[in-house]
Amino acid sequence: MPYQTFLSAISLPVVIFSHQKKQLLFANRPANTLFKKLTNTKRGVSYSDIKIILHDFEPPEASGPAASFETRQPIRGKKAFLWLEVTANTVMQDNEIFTVLLVNDITARKTKELQMVQSLEQERSLHEMKSNFISMASHEFKTPLTAISSTIDLLETKLQMDNLLDQFYRHNISKISSEIFKLNTMLDEMLTLSTIVSNNIEVSKQAVAVEQVIHDIKYQYFSERKDDRVLQVTVSGTPRRIYANKNQLSKIFTNLVGNAFKYSSEDPAVKLQYQKSRLVIKVTDTGIGIPEKDIPYLFNSFYRGSNVAGIEGTGLGLSIVKDFVERNNGTIFVESREHQGTTFTIIFKYPQEIPAQQ
Amino acid sequence: MTKTILLIEDKPSLLDTLKSLLELHQYRVIVAANGAEGLEQARLNHPDLVISDIYMPVLNGYELLELFKKDAALCHIPVIMLTAKTEIEEIDLALEKGADGYVTKPFVFRNLHDVIQNALNKGDEENRK
Image 1 (spheres, rainbow over the protein chains, first blue to last red):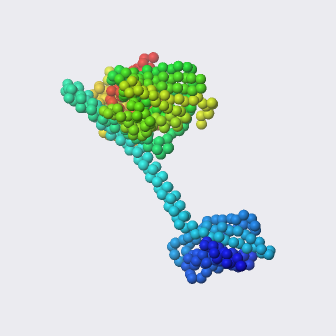
Image 2 (tube, helix red, strand yellow):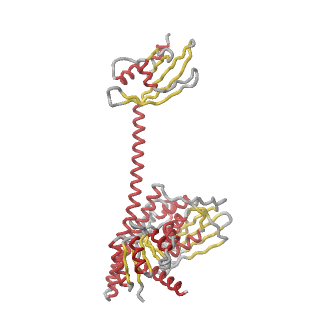
Image 3 (cartoon, each protein chain N blue to C red):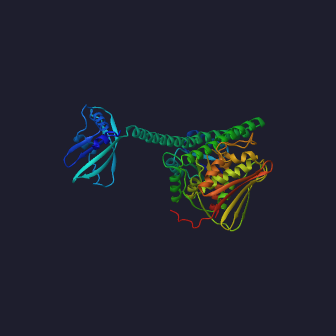
């Protein structure tokens, strides 16, 4: 039985030709259908059609492995095109070289692929726009917020000087003030979360003295409180540096210590234990504690304990903390008893060798 | 003696409010809407203290700090920075460039006033030496 019979049974376009003789030997029915579509005529495949498709593609050597390529072919007279995947084999027969082409119309797949790449690109740029917007907005919002809070201060000062600052004014002015700072905290958290999500967070790491970070945040954020509470800091062991991002460390402890103040009424404590191969940091309060059923979800975004009614918060803080601890190769866990208090423990291993700063 | 403060801030509304607040607290206040104007005012009026925003269109706060610290006639004047960013890097950079204090926006005036008094006291001590 001649080979043509077998090849005709294949549902993919098959073409056999000889470059030497510039001659087409065989094209099955699907091949003819495909080329009719490409040339927009009723005639079947010709040798010159094949040359157009191959362009400058060199068929493989005789009895070597098959070679394949993808090509975009315009449909003559139309503004459309077809994507083809062409696999070529070279066969030697009676000292003559034949090329066998198997052609696959991949237009549908290719179109989808391109659409996907496009929509991915679109999504990426949208995402970038979104996080740029959040970053821009939260910084821009601070200017009017500052003007408002300063104007409130001005009103308060003037009222006081004119001996008009009574309980009513005092109460309502401090209400406006406290709402402004709540809004500000929300902006900061939104900004932090948006940089985490878009993953373009500052990751420059360096050798950091954690006790210095704690000292800095203590005086920057937790000194001179109205209720006179202070952060108790104790250090044991010989201080060593860890390899981390200072900004993220500062956010971690600002958040945990802020929570410890917020959910308790006594002095919170930070214990730094410089152990042999690791630094263990415990942030402890003797406050309302966390109900056991909430603990598994505590680090999820927007999750808040079931006993925090009436206490302000966005539910973002601890998810940011966990993310930052992990980005700095640390681990964090929590132990808590309701009505007794909470301890967050963070562990950082010391670096083997601190890489030289860039 | 009344102290003179040079206030540099490009947002007119905030500039206006802060000026009033400082005046109510018995300071003499000179204002400027950007770093370049601020530098000029400083050379003309020799203030006891400068409060400057960081992000301003003409000559930003960092550039201003650098010029101040290089200038023999101005380098002794304490400079306090107002910053909208709370990142430590940002604050570190301001302190590195020679700022004598900073306040992050938004702030309560009481905090700014503490920072002002600290900077002025420090300035006085150094002048006595």
